Image 1 (cartoon, rainbow over the protein chains, first blue to last red):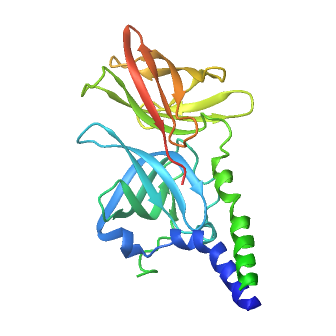
Image 2 (cartoon, rainbow over the protein chains, first blue to last red):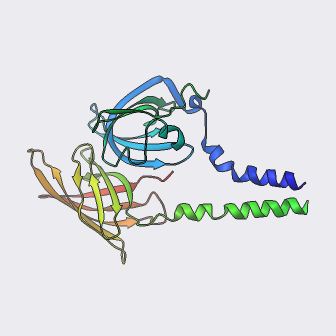
Image 3 (cartoon, each protein chain N blue to C red):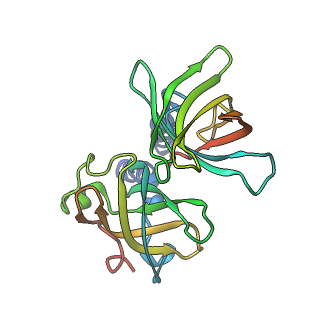
Length: 131
Length: 137
């Protein structure tokens, strides 16, 4: 009984992060590749995914679009050379990835090129890793 | 059974502080804000992005990082009435720069999607601006 209660408690405590984790195909469309250059407006260095946001000028409409990009977990992208300071607010970046299935300005990043240095970093994409 | 209920209560109590922690955001201007300015209900309204930070003594920031990449100047918040003032030099259509001055008021302070609305003066042009802070995830 004691172990069952303990297991239940652990399950409850881990419920938050588990809910935020998802498979690639549940949210993103590999047949909608996107490549965009924009300025970083926000970086969220959190588990289970690092998110960053860029402002992009839509050349057709002349309007600014805010795009949200999902990367892998902090520990995963650190192995690709990322640090918390790799990308700063206002930095210009070129992102390659897949767009969200629902058509939102939201995507799963495969790689990020830092325009300032020309460095290309893998983004720890879940594409091909999760179903 | 009682022990299970007790353990459940302990587990739920230990999770309780999570929600208030999300609400502790520090300075109310910090974050990225998106919106626009121009004649009310007009298609000519211009997009506006303002990213603000607090260095412990003053509000710093960046305006329109794609098109203008202009630094925020003289930014201040009056917490007695939640009014906000900031200035920025944006690119003018003639290719120079034009000083724009914003005076507004914060609303929905308890929300991460708080708003800032007020008057935007760019040279001779006077219009309204509205900004909404981007959500915290």
